[in-house]
Amino acid sequence: MSGSKPILPSVVKPITSAIGYYTPDAILKQLSPEMAEQKRLTNLIIQQNSALRAYIKGKKNLPRGDAGLKILKEQVDEFSASVLEARSLVHIQPSEEFTDLHQQLMENEKVHPVADLKDLRETRLGGEGQNKDCQAFLVDPLNGPKVLTGIYRYHSQVRERHGRIWAQDLPGDVDDIKSSALKPLTGNESVTGYYSISSKWPGSGPVLIGELGSVTPEMRFETTISPARDFYKAVNMEELLHLSDQDIRAEVLKYLIEDSDGVRNFHLGNGACVGWIHVNRDSKTDPIIINYIYKRDLLDDNQKEFDRGKGKIPLSPELFAEIYGIRDFSVTGKVHMAYGF
Picture 1 (tube, helix red, strand yellow):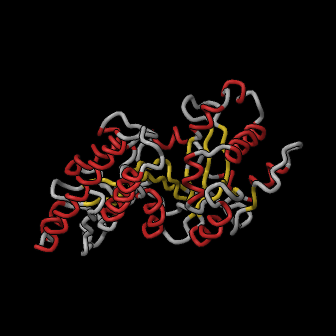
Picture 2 (tube, helix red, strand yellow):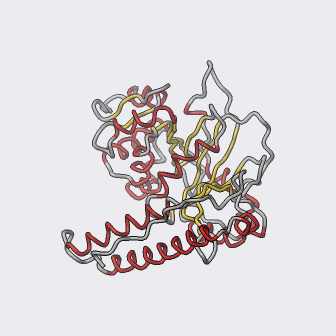
């Protein structure tokens, strides 16, 4: 196997209609011989990739430098990249005709699980003109469309103060967001918040984040609404919540500086900055929420500064000012004020 090469689709065509929605009719109409071959190749690559990943998982006790395992991992990376080439960015609609896709979304959702399909459709899968939606990467092998990764979005109005949106005013109550009923857009929305992302396919998450700009209104403020789940495990939350909000924010930032947090690495590695740290004392599930802010024209600059934790953590001016206002908390050389504010 080490000498074999993955099959790469040479022709990539979208499986969606011009407006970006998956429909069965759209697939059937595009099913030319060329497209049928692409579907066959995509199906084969997915099968090969899954088999290799299962094999590697079973060999996890092999030495880190094992040559055969290294070759297999490289091949998995190639397979994964080739499937991503055939992706389509799709707004998942709530209609029951897409039940198979909805079930995949439910199976993939690890951060904020939903109770059932009804809950998913009524609280997360908004259609055109609604305040919440799900954008996903799909591929279309022979056995039907597969969700590679999906992200849930919340659109809201945050009023400007002194000519701009301030980080501490961003949405920070994920319990309310994920459980509230869908509402019509008002036309005054200024912020799009990403409150959950589930990635089923290696490498698809950062690519999806990068492409969301194409389906987000120009000049829209973009932020995550991210629970600090790994932080909860690292501290005594009962004792922590006796501190002031400012001191809690300082403790969270210390953790982000000193520990290799996976969510931090994902978002800062994409070029986001730490915008604000919300303290929701009444929440039994997620009392600490972090806004990672995405300013698309400045992602490269922040990404270079962070460099996967080897450099400095970029902070919004509001968080930067608050942290530096805490006596005896030295962050010199560990953080910097993010670009573009």
